[in-house]
Length: 102
Image (tube, rainbow, N blue to C red; front, side, top):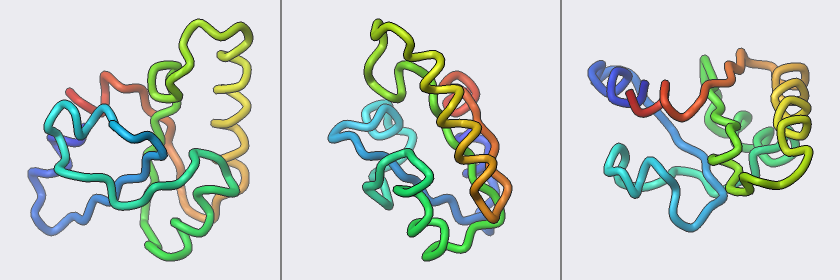
């Protein structure tokens, strides 16, 4: 998805990731992350208010959270998606890693 979005030079794409080595940077899809913030409603709200985006795409797969194999993680991921979508003032769409990079 990032590759497709970058085809439109008039579209500004901002990225948020709390990790030291984000997947998209390691894969060369983006040169850097714009905001270092936790992927929670509390962590993203200041970023959303500062950037004033028209749309937010959030990847919240196990791999993206970085804790695959932890019992109950799927329930946590679903709860996080629901919280983000319910509390945000802008449209938030949860996507998985394969749709981000393809």
